[in-house]
Length: 334
Image (cartoon, rainbow, N blue to C red):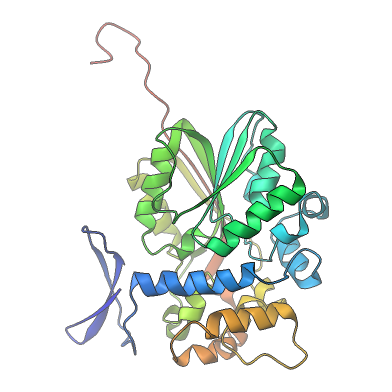
């Protein structure tokens, strides 16, 4: 949310009664609320969910493979589960075991849920959480077509997860937490649903340095997973503040320009070429058709001259919820 104060706009990173404030030296041309941001995200990803984008599309497959999925993994699940929206492969590093319960935050079409379901087996459970009804519908259809019996999908924002306390072994997420306006609330929810000793294995976008003004203040860049990202050191501090220990955030070294090369998210709000792919058309329609008229129309040109890797990184995030204390003597449980 943006407010004008002392001739500067102040960006509120949390607005739920306990407000954290970060000042910006940039003068903004509009006021953007968390609700407006979420509406823009829902509109964009709802349109993508209703498209025919899938692993059958070479560009979609290229994005997934660029961020760590193998051809074998992509062919082992319904093609419609992959829409080229990943920035990593969290199931590859989550060390999932048979019988575990795993939750994927921002599960989309079910890509990581289905891969997780294979690892936890019939005695385990893979649960997807997504705030977009169109994504939930697509994921459930994929589950039915794939014959999955150990998966479920819930419609919800990830800062209010509809699961009981201490009920989950592992939480994964793939390029979604950066889209949440209230990230501390997301981390608290993850901590709440994890069992003592439970773990986090997340792929996300985080910042190494400040973004240029044109990108940092762009709605299209926000829905494209860049402008909503926070600095790596802030990411770590927020996880520690939520109660996690053994927090590690590792720059995967993946090339974020893969999105531009595939003409995916960087095409948002630029005018698609007549011969452009469906991936470009969907990105344009779902972003530009949903946001107010702003300078976002020039985002593609801005990104074309900017190496995203200079300021942002695809990161692997690991954290552990402390294990329950065990009593070792007559007074240690007091």
